[in-house]
Picture 1 (cartoon, rainbow, N blue to C red):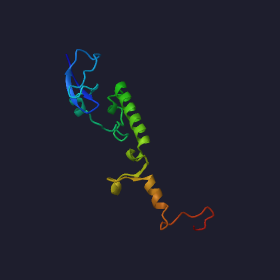
Picture 2 (picture 1 turned 90 degrees about the vertical axis):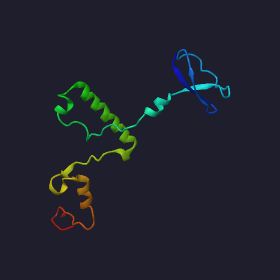
Picture 3 (picture 1 turned 90 degrees about the horizontal axis):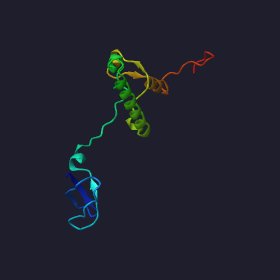
Picture 4 (picture 1 turned 135 degrees about the vertical axis):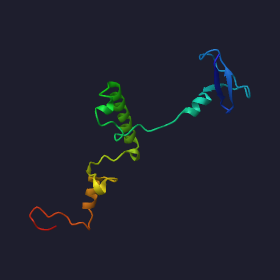
Length: 137
């Protein structure tokens, strides 16, 4: 017979031997009220949460997908869909998707992105482009 964890509405917890899953719940030994089954202590401690991998962590080559293994490709597709859905609900988790303009030399450790270039050209202290008729802005 398996041991199940139970809890009553007053917060008393206990374990009981029950012949099978569909058996009626035993009454609380402390107060006699009805009980409900709760997850076992081991199951409550073992749960962890982690983010699905981002697109930066996905394989970028055919060899990275174990030579195009269908299960690997499907697994990555599902993981990336989960991450995209999570980022839609929680924008603070999203990774930057701006294209990289420069990534060598000075920008090796912090690549320069299109958004950063646009932000620097829209500053008032930065000279703007000449107008279409050739006159300075």
